[in-house]
Structure formats: structure tokens, C-alpha cells
Amino acid sequence: MTILIDQPENVLQTEERNAVSDDTNELILDGGFVVPKTKPNDGFEVPETNAFGQVFRDYDAKSERQKRVEEFYRLQHINQTYDFVKKMRENYGKLDKVEMSIWECCELLNNMVDESDPDLDEPQIEHLLQTAEAIRKDHPNEDWLHLTGLIHDLGKVLAHPSFGGLPQWAVVGDTFPLGCAFDESNVHHKYFKDNPDSKNPAYNTKNGIYSEGCGLNNVMISWGHDDYMYLVAKENGTTLPSAGLFIIRYHSFYPLHKCGAYEHLMNEEDTENMKWLKIFNKYDLYSKSKVRVDVEKVKPYYLSLIEKYFPAKLRW
Image (cartoon, rainbow, N blue to C red):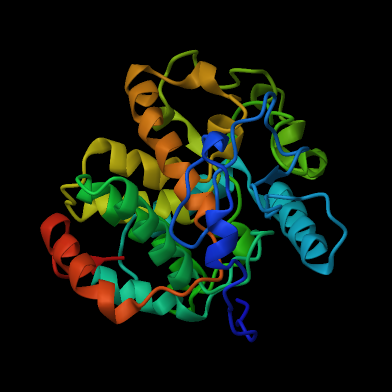
């Protein structure tokens, strides 16, 4: 777990934001970042850039941070196997680690920085509120989506000592299916060659152990905060709609929702929910900024949503 030292500062001034021409057909979010138009063949080999030159998901840069990110993915791709994920789901699916509220969990993330994220070094609580507030601005009537933005990364508490302090390669990063061939759209795909599953013939065809159209719910996805938070929400009886649970569970499944890989495993319900995930994803990614959110100002609103959709205390 990395502790943030540098203090964030606003890198975009109001006049810069206002300088964007109306014909860019791009969406300005809270924090001042602009969502770029979708590029053809949009993939990991081409970093995404907004109107101000802000680059997102650049995994090929040679900075020290990008080197750490690459090392993270090397460890993740080697260690995330079908059997490992099965054991993690069995263990953490018991939800017997801690009992606490949603907001208490938010506060636990104050000192965590995601080692797989090449974009920012801000603590996770900053990202959660930036995402939620950006969604709230553009979709004021979808309160379930506001709350989904706030809680989508709460599963990262798996890296906290209270949960056993899992290494970050078992908590964060892009997710991918196990039990079938590793698609080349996975970032730093080359490191899968050292994954034991790559030696198993049953796991190395397009469908692997699955059937086409089986539905993502029947597919074993690499273990991390997405799947864990999905289990926490579902097993604690949340009243979030299915689209909210889908977003929580698959928001890091970039090979699917950015590159179209593994679509052959989706069913009709997945296809419908994917529409909401693609709406959500631009806020998850492009609302990242160094503009601070006034936590005390927005806290009452999010506490009211938590009360609406979740019990007061949850099993984790």
C-alpha cells in the first residue's frame, strides 16, 4: 500500500476549460477534464488524450511510475490463475472479515493509492468522490448511478491489514477471464506466458471451459476489488439495480468494454447492462483530476443514498 505525499493542486484553470470550442462534441466533467471522442481501434497501445493533452491509460511511457505499473502487471499475470481465483472467492465470499458501514469503508481508503493506475497518485477517496460528483452533474435523476460511482472501488480495502493485506496484484488492475485463452488486448499481455494456466490445453482456446453466450456470471474473472465489492453488495441485500451490480463487478474489465474482447461469452442481460457500464466508464476514467472535492459538503447527500440502497452495517 502506497501513501500519498504530494498535495494535489488544480492544474486546469477556468479560462482553459472555457477555451474548448463548442464543435468538439465532447463532455466537460467536474474537475475540468474533457472526454475525448472515441477513436477507431481504441486500445491499450494508443493512450487516450483529452482536449488539453491530458493522457490516460498510457502503459508504454518510460517514467518510473509506468515502470512500477508494468511490474505490477507482470506479477498479476503470473499469479492470477483459475485455481487462485476460486480459492479467493471461497475465502472472501464468507464475508467474515469485518462489519462496517459503506462510509466507514470509504474512509479506510484515505491512504491508499492504486499501484496499477498510470494516471494519478491521489488517494482512492478522491477518485470515488470525483467519479460520483461527475455522474451526479450529468445524470441528476439516476441516484443509483451516483452511489455506484462512490462505491465502485470500495473492494480495494482487500489491501488493508484488516482484510489480510492482500498484495495489490490480487486487488487492483484490469480484470480478465480465467479458463479460456488470454486475449492479446490485455495490457502487458506478454507476461501471461509465465502463468501456469497458459500450459493447460483446456484453458487455451477461445471458449476454453465455457460455451458461447454462457453469460459473464458463469465466467471466472481474475480476483480483485471488482468481484469482491460485487459479492459484498449482493450478499448484504443491496437494492441497487442489476446494472449497478454489473458496473461494480466489471468496471475494470477493460479488454471487454474498451476492446470488445470476450464478447462471445456475453448473454442478452450482459449486453443490456453493458450500455450502462460504457456510460459509467467515461466518468470513472476522465473525471480523474487534481481538483479536490469538498467532502463535508457532499457527505450528507451520499449518506442518504447509502441509507436508501444499503443496510446500516455490512458484512465484509
